[in-house]
Length: 228
Image 1 (cartoon, rainbow, N blue to C red):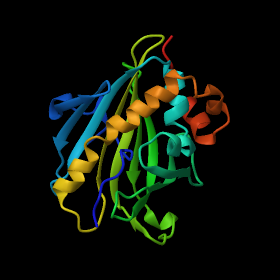
Image 2 (image 1 turned 45 degrees about the horizontal axis):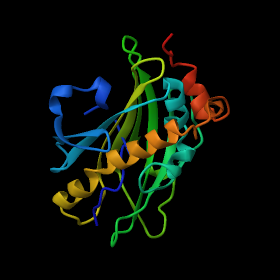
Image 3 (image 1 turned 90 degrees about the vertical axis):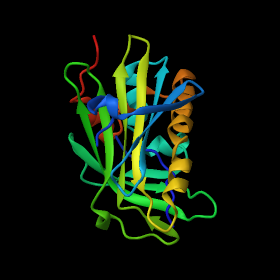
Image 4 (image 1 turned 135 degrees about the horizontal axis):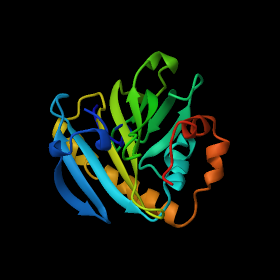
Protein backbone atom coordinates (compact mmCIF):
# COMPACT_ATOMS: atom_id res chain seq x y z
CA UNK A 1 0.00 0.00 0.00
CA UNK A 2 1.19 3.49 -0.76
CA UNK A 3 0.28 6.46 1.35
CA UNK A 4 2.27 9.60 2.01
CA UNK A 5 1.73 10.55 5.63
CA UNK A 6 4.64 12.84 6.29
CA UNK A 7 6.27 15.89 5.52
CA UNK A 8 10.15 16.14 4.69
CA UNK A 9 9.47 15.62 6.77
CA UNK A 10 9.90 13.93 6.02
CA UNK A 11 11.79 15.09 4.21
CA UNK A 12 12.69 16.51 3.15
CA UNK A 13 13.93 19.69 1.68
CA UNK A 14 15.11 18.51 -6.40
CA UNK A 15 16.22 20.61 -3.12
CA UNK A 16 14.54 22.30 -0.17
CA UNK A 17 13.03 25.70 -0.79
CA UNK A 18 15.67 28.31 -0.16
CA UNK A 19 18.30 26.58 -2.27
CA UNK A 20 15.87 25.41 -4.96
CA UNK A 21 14.29 27.25 -7.87
CA UNK A 22 11.25 29.21 -6.71
CA UNK A 23 9.87 29.32 -10.25
CA UNK A 24 9.19 25.56 -10.11
CA UNK A 25 6.59 25.97 -7.38
CA UNK A 26 2.95 26.78 -8.04
CA UNK A 27 0.83 28.28 -5.21
CA UNK A 28 -2.22 26.16 -4.37
CA UNK A 29 -3.97 27.67 -1.33
CA UNK A 30 -3.49 29.22 2.09
CA UNK A 31 -4.47 27.50 5.34
CA UNK A 32 -4.22 29.23 8.74
CA UNK A 33 -1.49 31.57 7.55
CA UNK A 34 0.48 28.86 5.74
CA UNK A 35 0.97 29.46 2.02
CA UNK A 36 1.01 26.11 0.25
CA UNK A 37 2.77 25.24 -3.00
CA UNK A 38 3.10 22.14 -5.18
CA UNK A 39 5.17 21.01 -8.12
CA UNK A 40 5.34 17.87 -10.22
CA UNK A 41 8.07 15.48 -9.18
CA UNK A 42 9.75 13.12 -11.67
CA UNK A 43 9.22 10.25 -9.22
CA UNK A 44 6.33 8.22 -10.66
CA UNK A 45 3.87 11.09 -10.92
CA UNK A 46 4.07 12.10 -7.29
CA UNK A 47 4.01 15.76 -6.32
CA UNK A 48 6.34 17.72 -4.08
CA UNK A 49 4.66 19.94 -1.51
CA UNK A 50 5.83 23.02 0.34
CA UNK A 51 4.43 25.21 3.08
CA UNK A 52 5.67 28.65 4.14
CA UNK A 53 4.85 30.48 7.37
CA UNK A 54 6.08 33.51 9.31
CA UNK A 55 6.53 32.99 13.06
CA UNK A 56 7.12 35.51 15.84
CA UNK A 57 10.25 33.82 17.11
CA UNK A 58 13.98 34.19 16.75
CA UNK A 59 15.97 32.03 14.38
CA UNK A 60 17.62 30.38 17.38
CA UNK A 61 14.23 29.47 18.85
CA UNK A 62 13.23 27.88 15.55
CA UNK A 63 16.40 25.81 15.56
CA UNK A 64 15.54 24.57 19.05
CA UNK A 65 12.56 22.88 17.39
CA UNK A 66 13.76 21.73 13.96
CA UNK A 67 17.18 20.46 15.10
CA UNK A 68 15.77 18.33 17.92
CA UNK A 69 14.17 15.40 16.13
CA UNK A 70 13.30 13.60 19.34
CA UNK A 71 10.59 16.21 19.94
CA UNK A 72 9.03 15.85 16.46
CA UNK A 73 6.34 13.47 17.69
CA UNK A 74 4.94 16.36 19.74
CA UNK A 75 4.22 18.63 16.76
CA UNK A 76 5.03 17.08 13.36
CA UNK A 77 1.77 15.79 11.90
CA UNK A 78 1.32 12.00 12.18
CA UNK A 79 4.85 11.54 13.56
CA UNK A 80 5.04 8.70 16.07
CA UNK A 81 8.80 8.62 16.50
CA UNK A 82 11.89 10.32 15.11
CA UNK A 83 15.09 9.35 16.86
CA UNK A 84 18.71 10.02 16.09
CA UNK A 85 20.85 6.97 15.39
CA UNK A 86 24.56 6.59 16.27
CA UNK A 87 27.33 8.21 14.20
CA UNK A 88 26.00 11.78 14.17
CA UNK A 89 28.55 14.52 13.48
CA UNK A 90 28.71 18.19 12.57
CA UNK A 91 27.75 17.54 8.95
CA UNK A 92 25.14 14.82 9.09
CA UNK A 93 23.35 12.27 11.24
CA UNK A 94 21.06 9.32 10.71
CA UNK A 95 17.56 9.01 12.11
CA UNK A 96 14.76 6.48 12.27
CA UNK A 97 11.33 7.89 11.38
CA UNK A 98 8.04 6.16 12.23
CA UNK A 99 4.87 7.69 10.79
CA UNK A 100 1.25 6.91 11.61
CA UNK A 101 -0.66 5.40 8.70
CA UNK A 102 -3.92 6.93 7.49
CA UNK A 103 -6.71 4.38 7.96
CA UNK A 104 -6.88 1.71 6.62
CA UNK A 105 -3.17 1.76 5.69
CA UNK A 106 -0.28 0.54 7.82
CA UNK A 107 2.24 2.77 9.55
CA UNK A 108 5.29 3.79 7.53
CA UNK A 109 8.92 4.07 8.55
CA UNK A 110 12.32 4.85 7.07
CA UNK A 111 15.95 5.48 7.89
CA UNK A 112 17.18 8.87 6.71
CA UNK A 113 20.37 10.88 6.66
CA UNK A 114 19.98 14.43 7.96
CA UNK A 115 22.23 17.26 6.79
CA UNK A 116 22.43 20.94 7.72
CA UNK A 117 23.46 23.56 5.17
CA UNK A 118 23.54 27.36 5.44
CA UNK A 119 23.46 29.92 2.65
CA UNK A 120 26.33 32.30 3.53
CA UNK A 121 24.58 35.31 1.97
CA UNK A 122 21.00 35.03 3.25
CA UNK A 123 21.91 32.97 6.37
CA UNK A 124 18.98 30.65 5.53
CA UNK A 125 19.53 27.16 6.90
CA UNK A 126 18.17 23.97 5.32
CA UNK A 127 17.78 20.89 7.52
CA UNK A 128 17.26 18.05 5.06
CA UNK A 129 16.35 14.39 5.61
CA UNK A 130 16.66 11.84 2.83
CA UNK A 131 16.03 8.09 2.98
CA UNK A 132 19.17 5.97 2.82
CA UNK A 133 20.93 2.92 4.28
CA UNK A 134 17.81 1.12 5.45
CA UNK A 135 19.93 -1.68 6.90
CA UNK A 136 20.74 0.55 9.87
CA UNK A 137 17.38 -0.43 11.40
CA UNK A 138 15.79 -3.84 10.86
CA UNK A 139 12.33 -4.06 9.34
CA UNK A 140 9.61 -3.57 11.95
CA UNK A 141 6.43 -5.59 12.33
CA UNK A 142 3.27 -3.97 10.91
CA UNK A 143 5.25 -1.10 9.35
CA UNK A 144 5.91 -0.52 5.65
CA UNK A 145 9.46 0.63 4.94
CA UNK A 146 9.79 3.68 2.68
CA UNK A 147 13.04 3.75 0.72
CA UNK A 148 12.43 6.97 -1.20
CA UNK A 149 11.58 9.90 1.06
CA UNK A 150 12.93 13.44 0.94
CA UNK A 151 11.92 16.29 3.26
CA UNK A 152 13.22 19.23 5.15
CA UNK A 153 12.82 22.52 6.92
CA UNK A 154 14.34 25.80 5.79
CA UNK A 155 14.73 28.49 8.45
CA UNK A 156 15.08 32.06 7.15
CA UNK A 157 15.73 35.17 9.29
CA UNK A 158 13.25 37.99 8.66
CA UNK A 159 14.00 40.29 11.59
CA UNK A 160 15.26 40.10 15.16
CA UNK A 161 11.88 38.81 16.29
CA UNK A 162 10.43 37.09 13.21
CA UNK A 163 11.49 33.99 11.29
CA UNK A 164 10.17 32.30 8.18
CA UNK A 165 10.00 28.52 8.21
CA UNK A 166 9.44 26.46 5.10
CA UNK A 167 8.64 22.76 4.99
CA UNK A 168 9.09 20.77 1.81
CA UNK A 169 8.76 17.09 1.06
CA UNK A 170 8.04 14.25 -1.31
CA UNK A 171 7.93 10.50 -0.72
CA UNK A 172 7.06 7.25 -2.39
CA UNK A 173 5.26 5.56 0.51
CA UNK A 174 5.51 2.06 -1.03
CA UNK A 175 2.59 -0.25 -1.61
CA UNK A 176 -0.38 -0.15 -3.96
CA UNK A 177 -2.07 3.21 -3.40
CA UNK A 178 -2.84 5.43 -6.46
CA UNK A 179 -0.72 8.55 -6.82
CA UNK A 180 -3.74 10.84 -6.74
CA UNK A 181 -4.64 9.51 -3.29
CA UNK A 182 -1.07 9.97 -2.08
CA UNK A 183 -0.98 13.52 -3.39
CA UNK A 184 -4.36 14.37 -1.89
CA UNK A 185 -3.35 13.19 1.58
CA UNK A 186 0.06 14.84 1.39
CA UNK A 187 -1.12 18.24 0.20
CA UNK A 188 -2.21 19.70 3.54
CA UNK A 189 0.47 18.12 5.72
CA UNK A 190 2.86 21.12 5.60
CA UNK A 191 0.06 23.34 6.93
CA UNK A 192 -0.77 20.99 9.80
CA UNK A 193 2.88 20.75 10.82
CA UNK A 194 3.79 24.42 10.42
CA UNK A 195 0.75 25.70 12.31
CA UNK A 196 1.65 23.35 15.17
CA UNK A 197 5.22 24.65 15.09
CA UNK A 198 4.02 28.26 15.13
CA UNK A 199 1.74 27.61 18.12
CA UNK A 200 4.54 25.84 19.95
CA UNK A 201 7.09 28.60 19.39
CA UNK A 202 4.80 31.56 20.02
CA UNK A 203 3.50 29.98 23.24
CA UNK A 204 7.06 29.78 24.53
CA UNK A 205 7.05 25.97 24.70
CA UNK A 206 10.50 25.63 23.12
CA UNK A 207 13.53 25.98 25.39
CA UNK A 208 16.68 27.05 23.52
CA UNK A 209 18.81 25.27 26.13
CA UNK A 210 18.26 22.05 24.15
CA UNK A 211 20.69 23.43 21.58
CA UNK A 212 23.43 22.92 24.16
CA UNK A 213 22.37 19.49 25.38
CA UNK A 214 21.11 17.53 22.35
CA UNK A 215 24.22 16.25 20.52
CA UNK A 216 23.17 16.79 16.89
CA UNK A 217 21.69 20.22 17.64
CA UNK A 218 24.83 21.20 19.53
CA UNK A 219 27.10 20.11 16.69
CA UNK A 220 24.91 21.78 14.07
CA UNK A 221 24.86 25.13 15.91
CA UNK A 222 28.67 25.20 15.80
CA UNK A 223 28.51 25.63 12.02
CA UNK A 224 25.50 27.97 11.86
CA UNK A 225 25.95 31.75 11.81
CA UNK A 226 23.12 33.64 13.48
CA UNK A 227 22.08 37.16 12.36
CA UNK A 228 23.67 40.00 14.31
